[in-house]
Image (cartoon, rainbow, N blue to C red):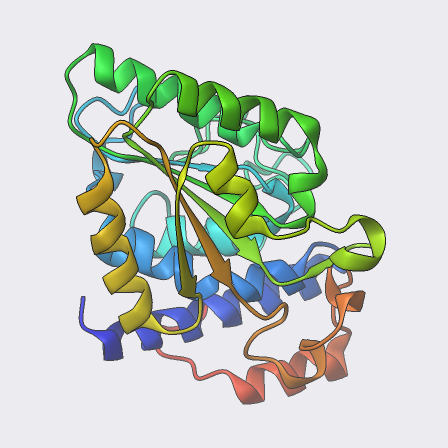
Length: 280
């Protein structure tokens, strides 16, 4: 997809996000808005996947696992807009008996979702397992995972990181949403992660960095990541983003991690985001 179309799609995804969380006065808009560009690129340009014939095993397809499941609004929007289910279903977000739960679940059998991710820290382990299955089956597809930077405070992440490097799981590309903020404040103030680039290198991973709001940079970085797969090491991308990207009053603060906009704030947000594909 051309960059102009990716930008247009990402704008609509952001509209979906703020409308979904405002509609039920519940959800996590900050990180969702910050990852809208990346997930738009992944689903509309990078991944080889088949929305019309979703299967849990994903044989012959690239797989994606959302580890920081609280940013479900952005994922649901991208899944719907790319054809996994009807766009109108976004209007059921977080409602009773909806398949679009606040955190993704598998018991609802929502197409596109292969793991429940309410608890942080588990997605890398799941992704590594899926990547090993692909290697055993001689399936040349890739496995992608997405994690919040605050999520890296979970010990299971580093156990998984050690395992992947030790077992040469070189068909996985993990991405870190590095916005520097988490629910309680700045990551450095809550529990500093130190030098992430050096830390992941020390754990045996190939480390790349990219601007999560620049489609050209992201495209080039993903191409480089693909070229480095198969070399005996897993790949991680540290992606710099801004929480609340696209909505001026949400940017620059952790306060919109898990707070929904009221009616007036929603109107302000929508005035900043172009409707390009039609609202649900």
